[in-house]
Length: 415
Image (cartoon, rainbow, N blue to C red; front, side, top):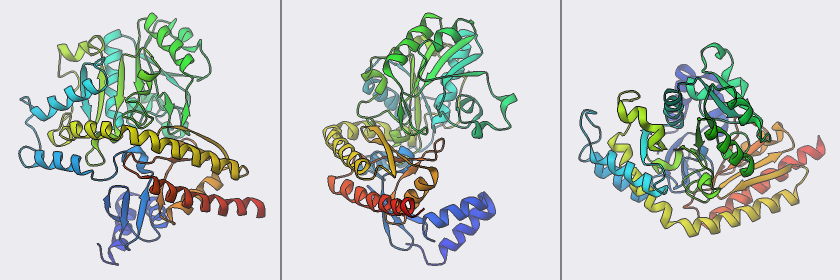
């Protein structure tokens, strides 16, 4: 536990070294305290309060510091936390094999990164090199990261302001236009289609599987590749290991991340077919990164996959409880919560306006519940229950959320 003076030093350091608006926002969110410890579904603040974590931008599907993951990482720390990058290491290869097998074996090639953008970058690079074509087709409302290559596929204009001339060529298509990909691919310069089956930052908005199937078929028929970004939706966040596999979509690469590190280490991965991976198979130095396949991070992966499967049935029951509770909340307060969307353990609540969403997000946070906003849709709140939560945790979270919605409703009626 920190001393009472330490939060002030933290906020001063955020202001001096990071961003003054960030210092103000984090101070307000934490009621003057900072987060100092975390375990399971709980985050502990410097003033002793404990917050139920149903947010963390989808990272903590297994909660914080899951014992099996901590043990695996600690064991690796004790023998070889980093690698020479000149020789093979068993932590790296064990993770690659386990992840490929877990996702059904359709994607035998694996490249590890540290965050979602890393996975997006290598997938797009491979598609452009493999086809010799410059252009990517992405979807309106999509979010794929903020490094330059990934940012080119992110639709929200605010994130791309001032960078247009240095971003790779991307065309955005409407999610309800089945013929869009065929029209774009007919121009002969499209390397790949990249999409999220459920758009997380855009308010937890699922795309139409029938439209996606048409898009996938059209892109492949034109000689391009299909990349499914499941960094937020995959690994049982939405139920199955991969949403695109459940929907039967023919894709050439899948991207996973966020919960892949078990709430302990940062790691992401691009998995793809032998065909798409051929440039890297031929020249392994075509795309490399100092910490790709880092032993300390990859050591977590087999443990994470085992825990995910052990909690599968529990996750299904938890998802049903969350769905029922959120739809009941919507029915009870239609003037505040205008729509509820989601599947599995990924849910979005649309509010009557961004001000109401902000009031609710701040209200739940100050009353013991962490949720995530949607960067591209400020009227939407994301609820991301961890797979390790128990029914009582869901009841507690819904109780806090209900109170915040009721308080926001009084603002509407008195407004």
